[in-house]
Image 1: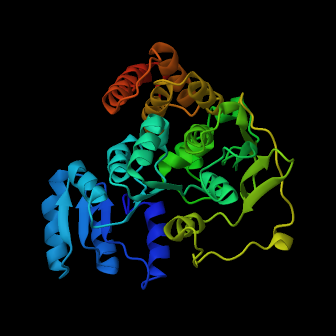
Image 2: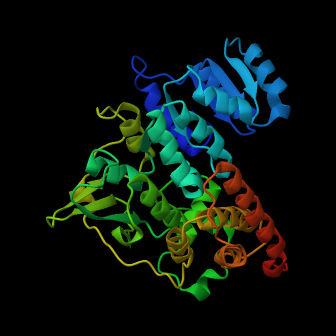
Length: 386
């Protein structure tokens, strides 16, 4: 479980704990929250615990000893990669947020693991590389974000080559749905992270508020299901009950519905092709009453259009988009820039840096670093003066 102390980690561990005869979390990783990781180790008793920050190794080791656990302590990114590829596990839940999760995700793919993929950046930054690596090693990628899991369930695979006309990703619209561009100028980080449907970390919540999250999902769908951009659509669906739809060439459309709870998609990924109890109740359509759909407002939320442009441009454009967005969102959460500066900074990076082909991990990471530098330098132009 990579990213065990986050919201996806909590949901995954909840599902795993419901099936002690079948499932076990053998490896838990966290970024720098040793206390939370130790609490999870006490509850789930993994064989290995790894903290990404090397300076925290002693605290983790001593905490495990003090708790009387036999769990082995590890630290550093290399240890996370090694454990993800090791015989200590047969499935890897990849839920480390941001580009930091790329190396461990690729390590799991190279090792032929069942890869439950929640780390969007692995596909956005290196989609061709990841899918090619997984195919060569016989690794099984099962998406566990709600939209791509919905498509996967409708197709019963990642194969969209037979009879699929298009896929339709749904977006909740986030906390600012219906607001004009002018109204968005004054929104705060606290408002942006207050998602109306999902419980997510701050970065993903802001991405949902800007619709960048949906833009990243468009790029993900392109790689996961080998679909051209003109076969991927986005509609806003505020109830968040229809998670995505697949339209077939015969005119039929299949949709996957369910309550907005990540435990459903995690249960799908952990047990596929079987179905297991997730702890999520069924959907009462009579109680819900109605399902609404509307087109996204690309003027108020230009991040979605920027992501589509980056996907169509190909090469290193998605890596530039992702890196610039991470820097901009971090600055917004720190109160350094306004909400509308996020798409402006992303567009600045996309128009400043060349979009040459970057099909190796080294080139992609170099481009990622370059985009971060460009965006950091541009922050001063959009700084809030308080």
